[in-house]
Length: 219
Length: 228
Image (cartoon, rainbow over the protein chains, first blue to last red):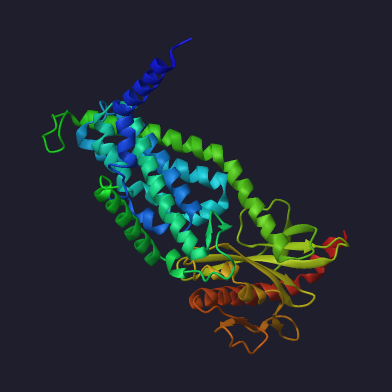
């Protein structure tokens, strides 16, 4: 039987090694330090347009994550094959392909969801988070690191869209994921589910995020 | 590793064309496979959604027959409901009586095309049900045409006023401002969704003017088929 103290040290060593590993860093940077929405302020079109409910925000975030993951993987795999002169055209082609796949998949899963997300699924093609990661990261790094980068950025994007969608749905409809939170007497803030509500909520989250980053040492 | 600003090495046109063609072919393969793989499920979900909508707009129906509107103004029964704008769905109750006819219609809304389905009962000459199939109206405002209870109340019994020989609609359906409805054929609109509710009025007005006289002309066919 192993010594509990040395086992504890081993566990500590494992977590410490995990935290310091390059793959973990690639993953974590997208969640927090380089969050695509709260830090890089990229992909604002879907961030503002489809986050009028938590469900829509989550679905758009997951769809974007899938496209990001697949395009980063393929771009990284083909990075030595695609000449630099035609790389942007090739990346757009790859991204548009995976967006089409996601569009078909969402239609096959739920017509209601497809109806709610509307044209914004097709617009993932021009989401600058995806082309940005393909050009800045996947085209210069190994497949493993590109996958970790895509997962980190993707989940960071999901987190941001979910945060916006939850606040807007809560104030705009009085519910979260369709479940009523406030009593029926609650007067819904219709503005929160309109485009203006997207800007207000984004400003609120940016304020919270930046305030925490500035004051985290004091906390 | 080259930086984005450094000059890329010179390569031949052939390699660029080959790389792009190969990438394009790979992408085409993915798209075709995904399309073929999801098509049956998408068609099934669309048919289910339409089926559900038909049952909703014709209360009391237990069976249906599908008809295609011919250019000469007659109806012809079709066995397979292929995607076609000129289809009407006749619903029959348990006793085999005509419970109503479901008709699809569409027109421009505030944001994009609104596609609706409504039920019409030739016996009472009334619209008896309504549902929005597709719309991209503003969430929280225009999309009230799908869920505002007071607006949906309009469609429980909305009379279509026909001429004596039932060959034309005498009073076209129009949407009026909320609370200003005076005539039976008027739609009580929605405050905050004026354009969307007027669009619904226009779509219904145009569709009923065209299709309701045709339904009455073909009523013996619709009723007799049920008895067969």
